[in-house]
Image (cartoon, rainbow, N blue to C red; front, top):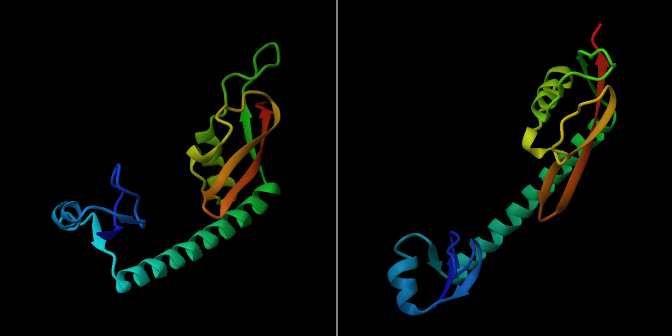
Length: 153
């Protein structure tokens, strides 16, 4: 029996795949539980239409990420921090604080989990951090944000 997977099933197939299974397994387990549908011409056409729609959505997401990456090239997120007696910075500026600073100063919302460089900014001056803006079937888009930390007076 040939079926189209509606959900991932370990050992059988992933969502959207057309797989061959035994008649009993497909008819008595997968189809009644909503994990798969019988592969008919109508369901195959529906699958192709859904795949085309998903491809268009992925291209749109990638284009949006590329626009954000271009904006990030020209911005600088500024912070102030206290300095010790030896001129070194007290504390660090975490990715969460950088996320909040980008939202507050520039109106750009990026999840802190998208930062590739997980280390915090912990020195005065400029730090450039990489952000994964998009990762999918259409490729990967990485942006870079410049963080400027000044000594608090």
